[in-house]
Image (cartoon, rainbow, N blue to C red; front, side, top):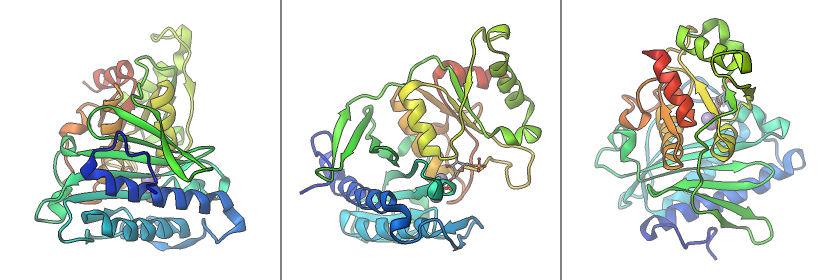
Length: 313
Ligand code: AHG
Ligand code: MN
Ligand code: MN
């Protein structure tokens, strides 16, 4: 029995998406048991980038790697691994994954997720991922929240599936997610305000100005700390998200990874009618220069993303 309703999934990609969903359903069960099961949020080490790894980061990476091996994935690039792994030398696809996004939220029962991006495999493992984000053939996220759900694009709109806990299967909930053009909410880690660039500060001050300011409307503020949760909220009811570059050491290109986080979210957002840039330039026209490279990310309702680009000019 497949883990996802096969109707709208391209046939050749079906084994990959099915493996992602089967593992997502399994992780959803582990996460739901929280402290009744094994330890999930305990620190277990550091990845090659110096990020602290939690037990669930490592478990998720191992489960996805094992499930994707027989599913036609040749090159597997994970945020938790230093180099690209070869899973099936005959496989047709290169898959990049953030196995567990939002790991600071594991122990506090707040939505966390998995993000993935798929390219056709090239001969060279690393080069398969260092290409324009517009060459992705699929991208998506699984959100582990009050519902476990999958948002996915194959380049023809953004589809939404929800895991039915009674059947263990992801069923279609929307054939075309549509990101509202106007926004009433914005998201940025405001504790970094003193490090922001002038255009970012100017945008946030416009949002804070409310009905008295140049926007002429009140804007609400939200920050979850899980990119997956933030993206899902914005795809559902509009808004803007910014993780810009700032003046802190190591944040010259923001915090998020191009290959594992920025490119897939940009593909999903654009396919739902929104926009995604690095502040100015569309993400889909950019490519990573190194596997774990970071990239500033601004996305959401097109009016707002255009306004932020104008402030950068
Ligand atoms: P990860 O858990 O995969 O390292 O990603 C966390 C990311 C993202 O989900 C979130 O938007 C951002 O880091 C939060 O960063 P700050 O702690 O700097 O706000
Ligand atoms: Mn992440
Ligand atoms: Mn992660």
